[in-house]
Length: 282
Image 1 (spheres, rainbow, N blue to C red):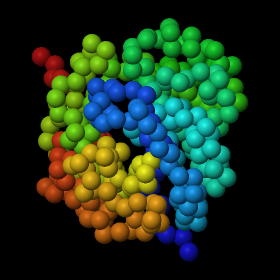
Image 2 (image 1 turned 60 degrees about the vertical axis):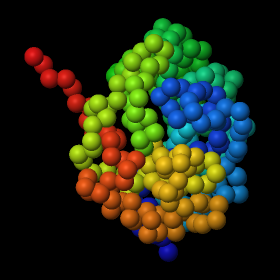
Image 3 (image 1 turned 30 degrees about the vertical axis):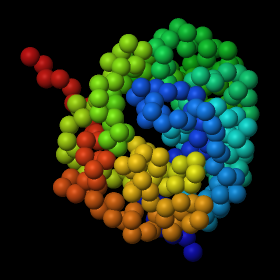
Image 4 (image 1 turned 180 degrees about the vertical axis):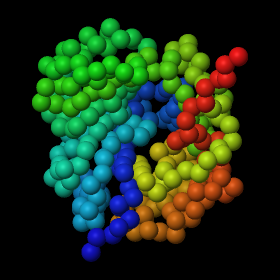
């Protein structure tokens, strides 16, 4: 019998391994080591997750992302894609990448629908477009500082240009609070990191899984941050994802974030899902 709880979920974020090659100033990886080691999400655990999702009718978006670089371990990425296609062949699959490993060679055999990349180093339009044109394909469009390039018999690539110059930051569950500069660009916090004045329904609509199997309530929270450990909802190594989604801890978190008066501490200044406030004109 299928569990209806998955009907509310519109995205599954999976951190398929731990490694990230960067230590960006706007990311907790600037302090927490993810570069000197790599731990893969166990394939047996991953298969168990996908079997449970399939049995319960999960049909939404699957994204390989979080605080790692998916393309930093190509062998693992290709294996995880192959396994996903076996169990959830009709689901939309995407990757979010920093772009450092983006090449014709590395994308060969990466059978996903979309690859989203960020121009963190402000290389600019011409260099990024030249990089894209190494692939057989065509430029689909250019909008909101993003190039959309369709690779022939491959994924749609979206490449966010000059990311630091156009971005606004979230505080990553309260981990970030000081002014952030990246590539000589001061990156502002969204809405000045003001006290949140709207409820959040992200936990109810999204599943977020870390490389060690931890299920987190939000994409901004992570189990290796001390102040976030108490919010770990469960672990798919020793429990089924459906049980975790139905447990009291998750239900309690959803209740707390649905009312601004009871927001958990990591959520107090988060502006996720709230439109960016533009300065008033004189």
